[in-house]
Image (cartoon, rainbow, N blue to C red; front, side, top):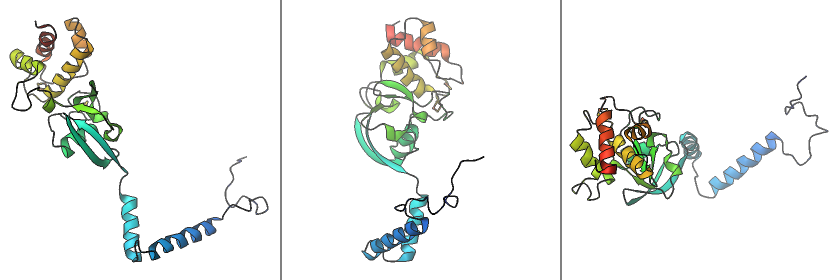
Length: 216
Ligand code: FES
Ligand code: FES
């Protein structure tokens, strides 16, 4: 037999005297709402209804301050916004690519506080105070300056064809080198295995990472 109690199943004599009924609750909140409206916030019931409806439909949003490529940004975004979409659609930084949008290809790889992450799986609102580096901010000399050594190595080794995976490969390669996972080509291959290249440039990508790490 079910033990679940519903409102109608509770005998009046056992209900706590201090507990308000649903009717009392609705009447009270309506009165308070009316007072707020009469207090001057919104006087038109139609406007209030529209406002209430809009508030119910608006997705929950959050405010976050983070540094991207050395520049501080404070933005208010839908709580569900991924870092990748924040970069591409809000901050005009389209260098990080959207491949699978599910954490399986690595095209969206960026550095967050020096660690590589799949930005498509990272919620922007959780990055309060974070330092993010994207492919646009990797070159020490800025957009018109000298390239990062790994960017140069990719060019020297001809480590790309279509180039779609390349920003993610380079950011992941930088992380791989910083983490010290470059003891052998096999180790580089393993620690770069989250970055897929549909053009099959793996041999040259590994060579570029190795060359940058060891000057080979
Ligand atoms: Fe992020 Fe594929 S787009 S892992
Ligand atoms: Fe085309 Fe890697 S260069 S996907």
